[in-house]
Amino acid sequence: MSPDERVAYLKEYDDSDKHGEPKTGGLIEKLIARGNKRTEEQLAREHAERTAGQTNIGSAAATAGQNPVIR
Image 1: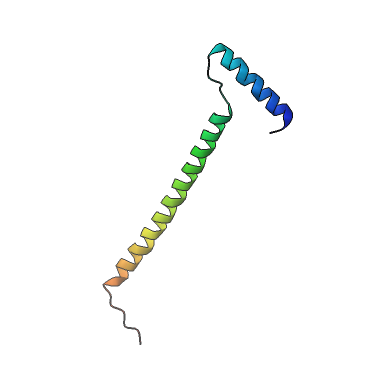
Image 2: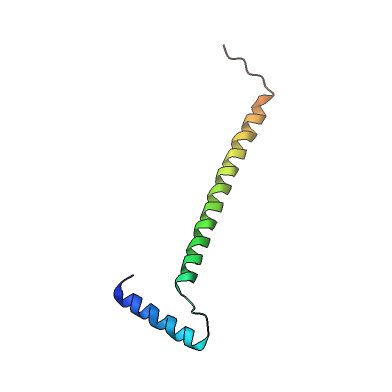
């Protein structure tokens, strides 16, 4: 955070504190949004991995009953 951004942030924080209203778009909200985004991306990635794993298991189960002979 640059010094100018810090001064602006602190001014907004003081103003919101004087009025008793929560500061919107503040650092906490940004951190929460970033964490939520990372969690959503991680869940999507895990779902894709799980789906890919089930596809591989499904094809292995389809050939399991054929008893191929390896010589």
